[in-house]
Amino acid sequence: MPRFILQSDGMTSIGIVGAAGRMGRSLLRAVAENPALALGCAIETPHSAYIGEPATALVAEADAACVISADKSAISACAAVIEFSSPTSTLETLALCVQHRVPMVIGTTGFDAVQLAQVEQAALRLPVLMADNFSVGVNVMLGLITQASKALSEDFDIEVLEMHHNKKVDAPSGTALAMGRAAAAASGRSLETHGVFAREGITGARVDKTIGFATLRGSDVVGEHTMFFAGMGERVEISHRATDRMIYARGAVRAANWLGAQAPGRYDMQDVLGFGGF
Image (cartoon, rainbow, N blue to C red; front, side):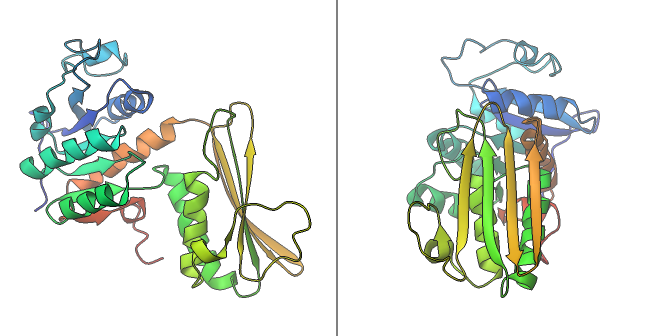
């Protein structure tokens, strides 16, 4: 059942788990910049040096009345909870969310199949939202890719190009893979069988219906993605360029604010943006 918990001043209360991490601090800023939201709790690990400090010790804009705590039971007073951390911590938080009927936004990655099954089980009892990328712009791009793939896939070759900073350790990026999955699903393909992730040497002609990926790494690039639909005599490009990592935090906070009014189920950012018809 939809559930909102409001502060005395009528603001929606959002809890942040993993508040001292880079993403956690961005989430604190995103809550602080939204006048309709309040910081319900800021949770850190028991050994954190910030335990007992006001949230302003992490982010100057945060609510000074909120004290950083290791007690996850504080989430029971929140309208929704957001966590970007480890699978183990996230599943622990999710169990408490089920117990207290608190919707949860999960930005954590690296779950194995068994852990993902636990998330799906929890979604039978409360609203749970997971996404490959929380940027509103990226999710608009994914919707456009779905539409373009339906219209163009028969006569156009599909290629994905992505670039990130030189410290990124995985390739292609999760967003690039999400782009490929969106195109594959819309055109009746499977990324597992149609994805091409490397080309070198004498590769032969491009195989029809494949979806190619190319990866660039350099400097401090936050994230750039382009999908090419290459047809005879014309080319369509759908691109997104990120210049500030706050876009992901703002998207997650928007998702949390939306999620509190939803029925139990498994959601993603496409649902938040109303792209269910794509």
